[in-house]
Image (cartoon, rainbow, N blue to C red; front, side, top):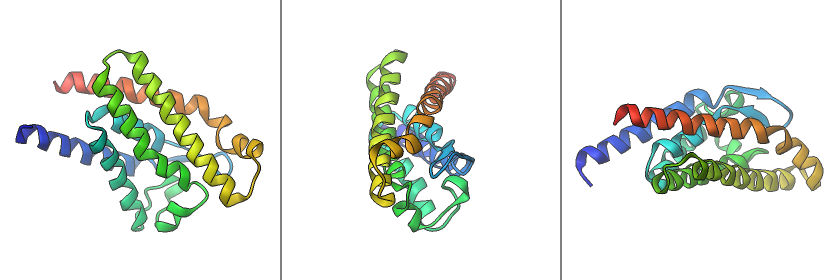
Length: 175
């Protein structure tokens, strides 16, 4: 890999991590789980970076910045306790979501397989997030799904669609 390509990937990864830090705190409290722009940022990161490892690393940088106390998580929260709190399962799914979409974008150009990766990422996020939520809150599956999944399916998919389309336009524009 050329040095300029590596530099470009690292710069893009850093910019994606910075974007996540800026937009993720913007949230609408829906209950114990907030509707946040972090999902858009995670999917955008995956769509912008051709390397699944680099996409996951960019999201992990965002998480590390939040863990040291910067208020970059939803509702302007920060600190390591967030990575073990009620919504921690969702946060820990973020690197996987970015990596899955990056792998799909590297392999396929058509929109349909990329949106399939968005759906797979959502499924993983909901599975990890809801399982952790149930464990921490000691709740049954149906109330947990009602709090953690059902209100978010369509908004999260639309965020994924927007992220894929924006990344596609930016990548075409950047060459």
